Image (cartoon, rainbow, N blue to C red; front, top):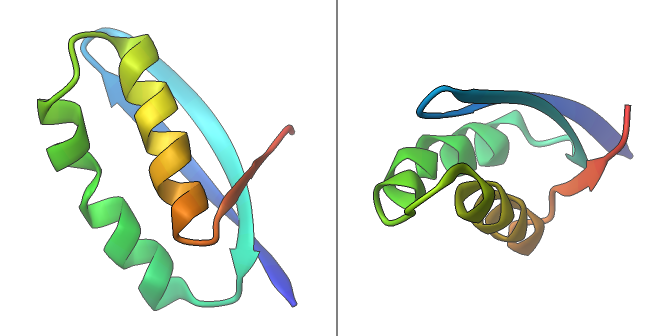
Length: 67
């Protein structure tokens, strides 16, 4: 069964709330979210960060959904 996850994503002055669906595994979600700062460190802008985060989370089984 899938679970919904909400992510408040920030990069510089840009902020967005994203929703994801994935397996009901809060430990895996928390672990993936903990790695997002490292992704941001290598990005030059908010758009690049957004794309890398969504790709990263998709690779871990969390798929973005529109709210």
